[in-house]
Length: 147
Image 1: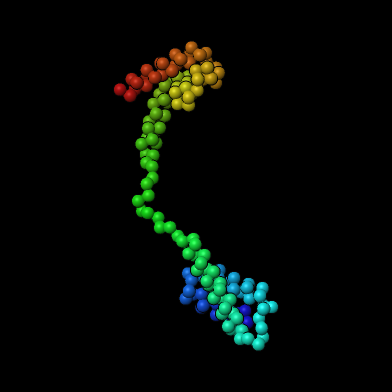
Image 2: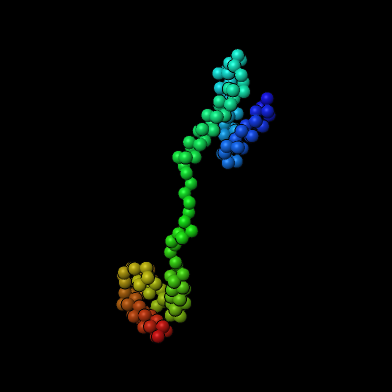
């Protein structure tokens, strides 16, 4: 009987719902028939009882689909262009790589990461005065490299 019900439900929902929803509805009906089998009256036609359950599950699926309608995606979705930033970051890394390591480190810490002179001095082991000198000399060399 389950095989016959399964075949009938597949055909019933194939005409009414897309495949994934039809398969889910078919399974729900089979579970509902099992759960509500005590409500079936032997004096009434079995087919009408099954058809009523299938119809109610179909209506539930249609209601759910109308509540959660799919949104069409616009082909012209605006996305940020990061190409310029990536190229600039690569060029900056290449330029900083041409400096002395002490200059590169303090320029990254103070100018790019926003650390104070005192914190950069603590992080690198240089004096505050030496950090300032390395930043000045490093920026001067960068300006000559760019020009």
